[in-house]
Image (cartoon, rainbow, N blue to C red):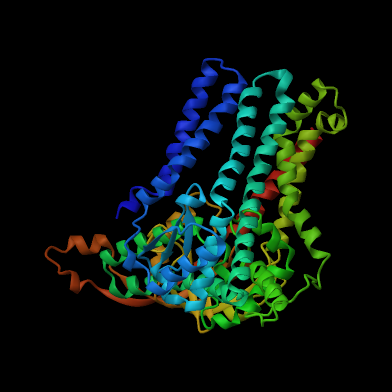
Length: 563
C-alpha cells in the first residue's frame, strides 16, 4: 500500500529538512531578518496550495460514486443546498477504523472522506451527524484558518534564529523562542476550538446533538475495539501476512485521526471500557472533574470527548431534547486542594533543573539590559550547589509521592471510574486477566502490554531506568506473557491515557528450547522442539533506581555546598 512509503511522518520530515537547509543558506549568506520572515510565508503558502494533492497521493481514497451509500450522498447534497455550500467531492477509505475528515483549500474545492468502519459502526442518524460536523469545517473554511495560524510559530522561530547570535538582541531571541513554544499550544487550542465549533454546527443543522454525542462515543470505542480485534486475529492466526495487514490498517487509522473527527490518543479511555460502551458516562466523569485532565488536553489536537459531549448535552436541552449520555454540569471536586500541591511536586525537579542549567546565562543577559530582579539569586556562587541539592530533594519527594500504597485487588471497570487518580496520584493495585497483545501492536520491540479482564482493557507500562532495559524485556520476556492469564501488581495512573505501571507481572507460561539447543541437533524437526510450562515473574526496579540516583544527586549537592 502506497501509504506505507508516503506517510505523513516522511512528508513532515522532508518539509523540516527543506526548511532547515533554507534557513542555513540564508544565515550563511547573511540575509536580513526580512528574508527569514518572508520565507515561512511562502513556504506555508506553497504547502497550503499543494496539501490536497499530497493527501490524495498518500491515502488510498475511493472517489467512485458507488463507494458511499446513496442515502448519505443524497443527504450531503440536500444539506449543502440548504446551507448554501458547494457539494464537496466525496470519497471513502476502506479501513475498519471509524473516522471521517475533510480537506481542501476553499469551500469550492473541499473534499470529504469517510471510512468503511464509520459507516458500518454508526446508525444512519449518527453518520449524518458526523457528515454535518465535517460540513461545519468546510463552512468555516478551517483549512485556511489553520494554515494562516500555523504561520505564527514559524515566524517566531525565525526571529529567534536571526537574533540569537547578536548580544544586543538576545532578550528578543529568548522571548521569541518562549513565545514559539507557547504558540504551539495556542495552535492546538485553536484546533480544539474549531472541532467544538464544527460540533455546534452539526447540532444546529441536524437538530440532533444527541446523535453526534452517540457517534463520538462509538467512534472512540470503535477505534480501540479495532486494535483489540486485530490483536486477537494476529495472535490466533500467527501469520506474518495478518501482522502486515494490521500494520497497514493501523497506520491508516492513525493518519486519518490526525485530521478526523476524533483522535484515538485523546479518547483511549472510552475504548478501554470494553464490556459496555453505554457505561461511557461514568468513565468520562474523570475528564470533567479532575484538574489534571485539562493539563493533558493542552497537548491534544481534539477536545476530550467528555467536554464535547457535555456541550452537545446542553444544546440538546436547549432544543428540548434528551441528552444521550447525561454528564454532571459542574466541575466541582472533593479534593480541590490536592491539584496545586501535586503540580508543585511534579514541577519541582523541572524548575530546579532548568534554573541549574540556564539560570546563570539568562541572568547575564538580563544584567546586560540592567534587569536585576533575579541576579542576586542566580549569580551567587552558592546557586549551582543549592539548585543541585534542590533538584535531588524535589526528585526524591516526587518519587515518594508517585509510588506508595499497598497493592489491592481491582477490576478495570472500577479503576476507570476512579476520579482521584492521576499521573501524580496513583492507586496501588493488583490486576488479574489475559494479556492480549503488545502496547504497540505488531512491534516485537514493544515492552508494554495490554491486559483484558471481564470488564475492559488496560495498558501495562514496563518502565526501566536502566539503559536498554525496556528493549531487553521486550526481546526476552514480553512475548511470553501474551495469551496468558497473568497477575499484575503496580500503580494505576491516568494521564493522556489510563495505564498500570508494572511493579511485578507473573504467570505460568510456555517455555521453548533455546535456539542453541535447536540448531545443535542436526535434522531436528521444528515440530519436535521441546516445550514445557513454567512460572515466570518479571519485576521492575525503576523506582528504586530513580530513588538511588536522586539520593546521589542530593548528596553531591550537599558536598558541593560544604566545600
